[in-house]
Length: 607
Ligand code: M6R
Image (tube, rainbow, N blue to C red; front, side, top):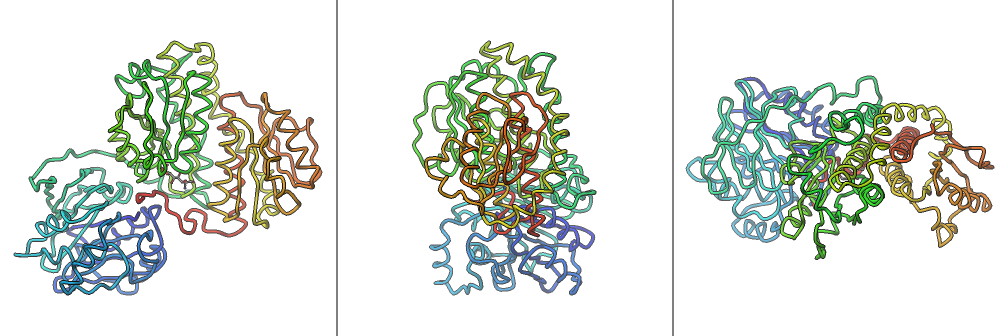
């Protein structure tokens, strides 16, 4: 999963391409490269590391050009290195950038090597340049691209330039996102509209099998049968302020503190005075919900944790059973689909390859309908699902998901209420949840005040290499999310357990070297949780407990951090906040690159 961008313009494009790559670093950031057409040759610059390293090279070489392509990489085949960085070239004639995975790369590489092509990298992408070169006849790059892509199996978004044309890019898409940005006297191609936010608001999203020729004053799209087609232009106002850090040190910090607003945006126009409004999941959704007997959730990472929290709500509010599966596992099972099962995907990006593949797999099964909870309206997941609810969190740039998670939780509450409403279940409970949700932005705001107390415990946790997270009931998936946050940005190994399960093994880990973070909200399980924590205390464990009633519990080693009193249904959302803050400050203390942690990428568009 990488980010690709291309530009054909009447002005110099180098800076524009680099700016676009910076916006797409969430897609990968282990190396970057650019190819710029310069009449009699193509200048290619590549650098190991982040886009900044490429930008430094550009400052040094100052190449000027009105046509170019560029790439930021997240390694799949071949380690991060300059040689494996894109653009890849064939015979100093064809230059390409690619996002995706070519599954039949071994056969194609062999075939091309047998015909005399020499490979300079270990990637699966380089062969695309040679394959286009192999098909290149009569100066026709489009035709060569169309013939080459017919041989590719897997997923690709490709942008290519060739030495003989100083005025055109040729692009192709199959199962990896790609769009054209329509400007004035300039047109672009990119993996994400965010990359072009400062250049245009008009976008054309390519469909699977499409190829296109992009010039500064025109573009033409061809479908999978190479027939010229019209695709709609979508107008999107992408707020450029939302892609800058503002007064904050990191995007993650900004996104944590944006959560009162993002929750309020998720709720806007979706709640009436006593209940959720009808058809917020689109026309016809109420009829589907009336027939829903079960839910199958499929998602990855943080979004999967949201599904696990949702399960508790669907059982209680809508009275229907739920199954929750990793998308990467679900797609390789043969699930037995029971009558009346609604298939629900959850995803921030809407481009996660495993989740998208699971949706496509599910479409051939006997599900009642498909629904997605997604943050990116233009994403493949949103476009391919029967029903969608957008979380409206705004762009999330930090690799560690924060506001996307809490807005997913809000959306899941709205879904559980909508299903209950369509089935005439629990009207009093729905009214109570409506009230709780209206108070949610203020309650999140209050929970952000835990920041100061958390900063005090940070150094003690930051010096350890392991941590245990404990919670019970609906708070178990919340501590799973807290442990994931700590791992991914601070590189501390963190494991989450339901507190009652400790005595079945993990208690053996407890000594003074492992901090134990626990959530102790006021609910039916508080007493049981406290007994579990006493077991930890008795074994010398250091406890960091977030709860609402310190009087019930004394801590010998560690700290108790008071939480605002909060109501039952929104409590899991509120208790998420201090765990995000904790991970953030621990990572700051350890000095990690927390917006772009090692080995990860924001949007995982490869399997
Ligand atoms: O875009 P998605 O929600 O589908 O992404 C799924 C996961 O890759 C994502 O949640 C990942 O686990 C986050 N980095 C966690 O913070």
